[in-house]
Each structure stands twice: as C-alpha cells, then as structure tokens.
Image 1: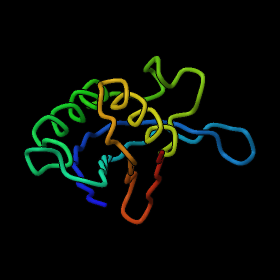
Image 2 (image 1 turned 45 degrees about the horizontal axis):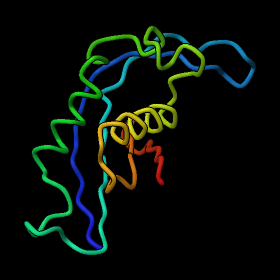
Image 3 (image 1 turned 30 degrees about the vertical axis):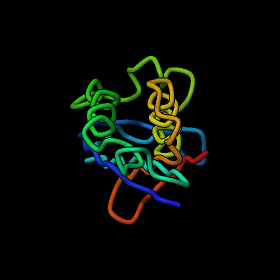
Length: 119
C-alpha cells in the first residue's frame, strides 16, 4: 500500500459544549489539516495522487474558514465544530471533489490534540 499526505493550515475560532452543557468561551487555534491518500498500486505516472492537485483541493476546502468563527459556517450549524467534526467535513468535501484515493483526514487542533476521520 502506498500512502501520501498533503497539509494545509488555517487560523479560526470556535466554541463547543462543555460537559455541563454550557458553551466554552470563544477561542482560536492554528489548525493543521492533513489529508491522506492511499492506493495498492501506483497509477501510470507512478503516483498515488498528484500532490499539487490534492494540496490545492485541500486548501480550497479550508480557505473559507481562515480567520473566521467556525460556528458561523453552514457546515457547522447543526453540529459543534469540534476537531472530529472538522475532520469529517474536510473528508466529505475532498471526497465530493473526486478523490477516490482519500483514506483519512487528520486535524491538529492544538499541539498533542489530534482527531482523525477515515474511510
């Protein structure tokens, strides 16, 4: 199995529910998003996926969130913008862009705090 990863970053704020049901204070992170792509065999160019195309697609997905409040975006209206949900939303968006090799999205919300959504 061959796997490649591309990375994008953005800075944004969010609020999620505390264990007691209240919302935590609005706070920000420098989010790091890694998208992984896998194939059993390389394509006729010797690649899993073109790095430039994959990186461009990932940047396109996260660009609207740059310097925003994630709670204000339609994709997070009905669910809290936790790192887990961000990973899922990025995975779904990349999948909809036609990347059948996509196998996982990893979100680093803060150093040592990582959430993964995978196929």
